[in-house]
Length: 479
Image 1 (spheres, helix red, strand yellow):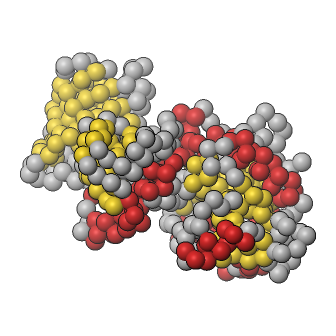
Image 2 (tube, rainbow, N blue to C red):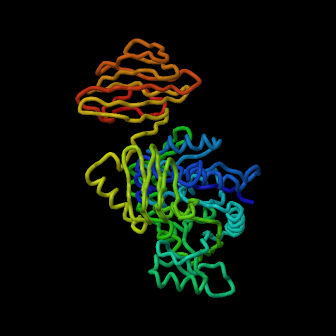
Image 3 (cartoon, rainbow, N blue to C red):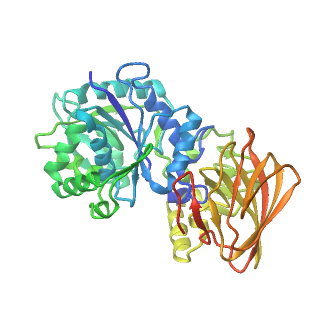
């Protein structure tokens, strides 16, 4: 039996779930339906495939360079330490992402079965998922390309469909169907033989590479050139940037899957009825959450009065709603969304406008995660900014300096090791220090508990890009 290689595609941005999902902290890393992020849920699901057997292989994570430490930290929380990270220097959609994973899997002459899943979906019936997956793996071992087709339970117009052939070979795909109108979707549900296309694929690495060479030789050549120019930094593998920028941007479906029917490649569907959702917008989140007798779903500190069929998500404070129907209310420390639940797809228009105005709320939350911990910008004015900073045990920030600001640090809890010019000192609770403008400095936590400080910045410019790193354990040196 072939080894099984889980491949998690983590490149999505989740713009329709703003303000909770942002470019710097997209939806796959957010806890929307439980105590773990969607990414962590996907890791746990796929880790069960060959657990404890000779077929067990650590997950391959394909994602954005910007999110590498966030993904690594969430894997650590899951107890997974043997993952491979393929970092895309630019986004090129899912077909190049899968090609990188297949090339990595083929190293050393291996040819595992790839279990390919987006990292931003939910499955509520784990047993049904594992059963369908095992059936798909059996077919993939024979050289077939297999997709897990979601058994439709409503006439959904927001998904693409897969049509099976009308013959005794009931698992073979006839063709793909674009998102239908309501009348067509209702007909599909009545006729049967149609499944939602969820982007879940199972196939051998060699089969994908051969199919890509057959249908998109230009993409195959460009990906191979980028792979040949790769660099490796621990668990992080980076394809050559200049070569990868020339890779065509296209999805798995368009590049290969839609070309398979009628070709030498057999494309099959294994039906999946396992409580699947892609949580593509806030109405899908509402549908996935438990509800009260009036159809309301909520997370966080929420009070509802005389309201129906409404979703309220509170992140940092009490949110109360009175006398509303079919609304979505999402609160974060720096932004609030109020939307008609029927218009959730249009949230991306807000994100586009934030981008046009170059607003920071499009990209980052007020609380920003870093490999060493996080900082929360709690207040700011014309020439000052106040941050709450937490540093993980044994972690440290880079050795750095700023051209336009000075900093005051006060320790709230834990122990701080402070490099301030030529001097290195230890500070404990209620002790403080001053970092002059232009002074080389570093903050570290030598202890076994988290370090928390309050930082007050003052100066003519307080942007995050005013930094020069001289040394950094995370490889982030330079301006």
